[in-house]
Image 1 (cartoon, rainbow, N blue to C red):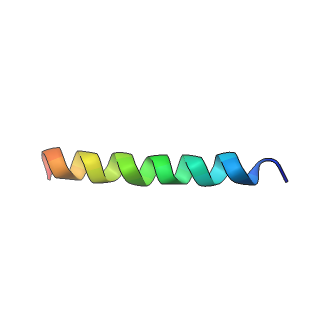
Image 2 (image 1 turned 30 degrees about the vertical axis):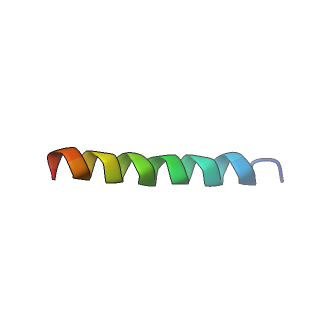
Amino acid sequence: MDWVVPLVLYNLLILLAAKIIEKFFG
């Protein structure tokens, strides 16, 4: 189940990027 951690980190990274984009371009 070593794929769970990268998957969670990847989802967090997407959410963070979405917040940043929304902050600058929203």
